[in-house]
Each structure stands twice: as structure tokens, then as C-alpha cells.
Amino acid sequence: MSNTLFPLGGPVAEDDIVDREDFLKSIQTRLADGQSIMLTGPRRIGKTSLALETLRQLKKQGFYVASVDFFRVSTKQELATAIIDACLENRTGIHRTMDALKEGIKSVTSATKLAMKLKGLEFSLNLPDKNTSDDILLSYALDLPEKLAVVDKKQTIVVFDEFQDAARIVGDDVFKLMRSHFQLHTKANYLFLGSKEGIMNTIFAGPDQAFYRFATILPLPPISPLAWTTYIKRKFGDQGIKCKDQVIHEIIKISGGHPQDTMLICSETYYLLLETGEKTLTLDSVQLGTNRALASLTPVFDGILDELGAAKRILTRLIQKQSIYEKGTHPTEIKRKVDMLINKGIIEKTDHGTYVFVEPMLKEYLQREY
Ligand SMILES: Nc1ncnc2c1ncn2[C@@H]1O[C@H](COP(=O)(O)OP(=O)(O)O)[C@@H](O)[C@H]1O
Ligand SMILES: [Mg+2]
Image (tube, rainbow, N blue to C red):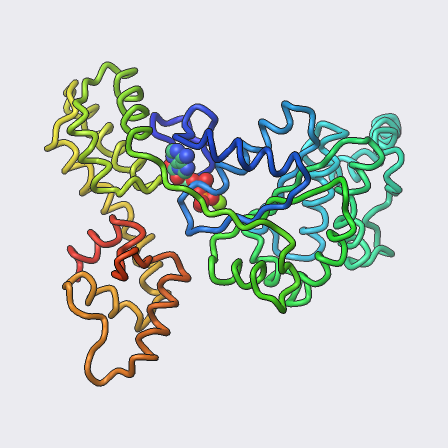
């Protein structure tokens, strides 16, 4: 977690979460009631921040919580260990209980103490040893949230972040495997997050898919301009920097209120003011801050555009305000590309049937570069 004035690039602390009170309340209520939830959206829009804040609040209310990020694991055994560690932390209070157990073998007293804390969980000190296959370990891990919840009479809420990556780690059957465990759970429920919208929607909304109807799919609402204005004013104000609402509105107009892009423009503009010693936020400084923000987004945007391949052409046509349909390309081919851009969270269809960029800064970048 970053200590900068405007936090960037990872889950943000409670104080810097702008405008999510209602949505947080709604997620918490549903989770507490035993529902499982799926949230999907492109990277950098605040899914992880929201999920971790949800867990912080639920933990305060006495729930057991666990969080596993599939980005951070690459093998079946690592995944199983991550789930087990996240669950056991509720009992042991330490991050990596599995490592501690292995280490602890050297010191019999601490190992015994730790083992005591794992009572009732059918947990063997030797897990995982060479006799425990990765499949057995994973199977144990997948049932641990429920086991823990039942033994301790504590509802357990588990976050699985970048869930679509499970297939990369375990193989395509992983979702069937997980569902076969989770559907029997009555005291553990789940919040699934994923940044690959197309895959996440398939996993959870495809009638022939393992997680069909297992979780409620909630759309992530945008952050309101008013909430941004209040937040930005407070943050600059705390540093003795004056800012008129009109200038803040310009920031929000450029970023479209996109969570990380808004933070980034604020951050770059703030450093600019620090460098020049100015104590007022001006339109000029915002403009310069935006240029710097765009420069730092270059690798991100290039990465996104690279993945799009030929569908990039649709974006340039949108920018040039041309019809997306063109001579020589079959309409179904165009439609396929448009669907892909929507699935990837690059564009969305408005009520008027037109297409707009989800991230205005990407549009700005394309306008400047292409
Ligand atoms: N509610 C929010 N309020 C303010 N900034 C946010 C919010 N959510 C996300 N951000 C910004 O976006 C960045 C990425 O957030 P993160 O939760 O990691 O997104 P995701 O998990 O969707 O990739 C954060 O570091 C922060 O700069
Ligand atoms: Mg995330």
C-alpha cells in the first residue's frame, strides 16, 4: 500500500476509497447473508480495493475472512497453500502458517503451540509432505473455509481475486472441481473478482458453465463527480493547496472519473506544484499534470492496444467519428471485433446505440499517438 498523497497502483486504504459507501454496504449485506458475489471490470477500476475494504469491515464485525490472489500463485500446490494460509490466519494470526509449521518443526514448543491452534481442522503437521499429492492438498484447501466456519461457528467470507486465472494454474477442469466443493458449503461464501470480463462472464453466466448461478453478478458503479470533487479538495487542502471546483471538474472531465486515472492526474499535478512551489491548483498545472499522466500510462496503454490486434482499427475509426462499418470488411467481422472490445472493457454501448471509450484517457492517448 502506498504512502503517497494520491495512492496509486494497488489496493487503497480506507481513507482513500472514494464514494463506495453504498456499494460496500450492499456487498457486505449480501455476503453476511450468505450470498456469493462476482465482480468483474477492467484493471485499475478498484475491484481489489473494494474487496479488501469489505473484508476489513466484515472482520471488524466478527466474521472470519480470507483473501487469495490468483495472480500471485502459479502452481496447484502454491494455490492450495495460499488458500490454507489465508484461512488459518483467522486462527493463528500469522500470514504463512504453513511455512511456520515447517519451520516450527525445529522448535518443538512453538510447533506444538501452533498445532494446538489448528485443533479440529484435521490438519496434520506434515502437510504437505511427499506423500500428500497436490490434488489432495488442493481438495483439503477448497473445503477448509467451510470446515473452519463449522468448527468455530464463524461464517467465513473468502475473496478470490483474478479468479479467471485458476484455469492457468490448475487446468480447465478447475472450475468444475471448485464448484463441486463450494456448492456444499453452507457457512462459507465467496466474493469472486476478475479483470478478464469476457472469461468471468462466461464462467458465471454461461448456462453450461460450472459457476452458472452460483454467484450474484454485481456491476461496479462509477465514482460520482461530487465524491471526487470533495475528496480532491480535501487532499490538496490538507497540503495547503487551494483549488477551485472548476479546476477539479476539469480533472474529472479528462479522466472521466476513472479511479486510477483520476488519482494519477491528481498525483502528477501535485508533484508539479511541489516542484514549482505553487500553492494554487490551476488549469495550466492540470494540463501539464495530464501530460505527465499520459506519459506514465504509455506502457499500460501500449500493452492494452497490443492485445487488441486488428480490433484497434475500430477504435481509430471511433476517434475519427467515422462509422465503424467500412467497405471491404464483412459486418459480422466488425461485430465480432466490437464485441471483443466490449468484453475487454475498452468500449461500451450507450443508450443511444453509440460506442464510447470506457477510459477517456485511452481515447486521449490514441488521439495524440495515432
Ligand atoms: N474507490 C476508489 N477511490 C479512489 N481511488 C481508487 C478507488 N478504487 C481504485 N482507485 C485507484 O485505482 C487504483 C487501482 O485500484 P485496484 O483496487 O487495485 O483496482 P483493480 O483491482 O480493479 O485493478 C488504486 O491504486 C487507486 O489509485
Ligand atoms: Mg485487482
